[in-house]
Length: 288
Image (cartoon, rainbow, N blue to C red; front, side, top):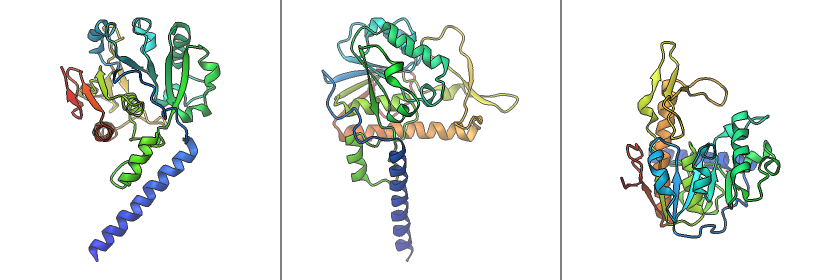
């Protein structure tokens, strides 16, 4: 009887998980993401995070033959025009979830428009079309805006065979918690066999601070920062600050997703290499 109860409970949870995915997909997904055809010209691709260690790698990157992926505010730095990345990925709702678009986000879009003189694909979530008129925002003929689905279908109650099919078609994905998650998955979809990660320390958990007012934050470090690194608080989508349990849960989910990415990459015969010194990511083969 106990076994039957657990079986029924698991079946019920699997149905709820699937319904939740379908509901999200109807609201913000597309059956035709821009991931169906192989866009890559080679077997290798480099994904550049914005961690401090990238600063030591940038001059070396100028001589590599592999295509390069950059993220977030990379275009605001000095190396953007020199590196000429093939792909640019955004995933944080900050860039497109508010009207009007924040000034800092508009600064990035203007930098991309003004500086890009080579063919580049800018990947953004499909749902961003509801808030952003991409034809107006990105008016550079060299930049092609492409859309990906960021709707998760994962966890212990997702159906493994269905999950694999949905991932392969790009209509579902892992639970994306940062832009590196999104970038790796997109490059797997695009058919790359080897993905090389740089600047993905993911170690800001080591700089967590709780202030005298019980505000939880961390020291925000990027390669393009100067000597001073600001204290930054975490906020939820509703504007409320994170608590310590919230922060630790965020990191738990972030690192769990890396392991799920590694599992999916293996099913696609894709190898992922982490070249980042002092990275806390333990899911991929290390080269450093």
